[in-house]
Image (cartoon, chains in turn green, cyan):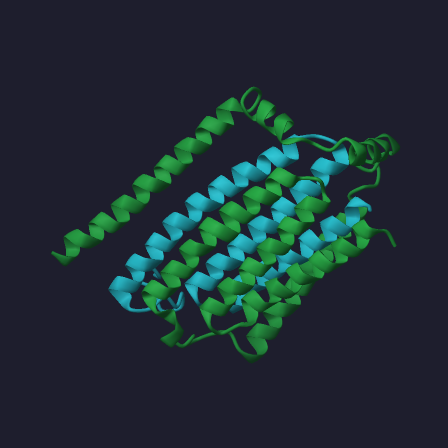
Length: 180
Length: 99
C-alpha cells in the first residue's frame, strides 16, 4: 500500500463522514461546520491529485468565503430555535434512503465501467498519467489556457457574478420598499 | 492509484447530497447538500483531468466554483427575504405557488 493510497483513504473517509454529518445534524450550525470539514478533506484529495492551485482555491473560496456566508445567514436568522416540522420520517425516509442507495450503486457501476474501451482507460492514458506524477499540471498551465483558449467562458463567468450581484441587490431593495 | 477510487468516492459524495435534499426540509441544509453535489462533481473533474493529463478538467472546476458562489449568494438572499416574510424556511411551509 503506497502513501498516496493511505492518504486517499484517510481524506476520503473524512470527507464521507463529514458529508453524512451534514445531513444528520439537526442544528444547521453543526451541519455547516461538518461541511467545512468535508471541504478541507476534499482540498487534501486535490493535493494528492496534483491540483495544488485548485486545492488552495477550494480552501479560500469554499471553506472560506462560501461557508462564512452560510454561517452568517444561519446566525442572522437564528435558526437554531426553529424545529424542522414535516421532516420525512419512517417509511418515506426509508424510501429516500433506498433510492439513494440505488443511485450510489448506479454511480459506482458507471465509475468502475467508465474506463473500459475509452480513451481514459487506454494504455496510453495510463502511461501519460504515470508520466504526469513526475511532471504535474502547474498553475502556469492553468493560467495560460484560461486567458487564451477559454477567455470567452472566463468573461461570461464575470457576467454571471455581476448578475448575481445585481440580483442580490434587487432582492434586498424590494424588501425595503415593502417595509416602508 | 487508479481513477476508479476517486470516481467511486465522487459518486458516494454526490449520493449523500441527493439523500440530504430528499430527507431534509430546512432550506439552508438543502443548499449545503447542493454544495456537496457540486463538490463531488469537482472531484470527478480533477481526477479525470489527471488521468487524461489535460488541464481543462481543473479549469472547469474554477467555473463550477464561480457559479456555486453566485448561486449561494442569490439563494441565501432569497432565503433571508422568505424568512422575513414567512418567519420560516421550512420548504414544506413555503408553498404559496402550489396550485
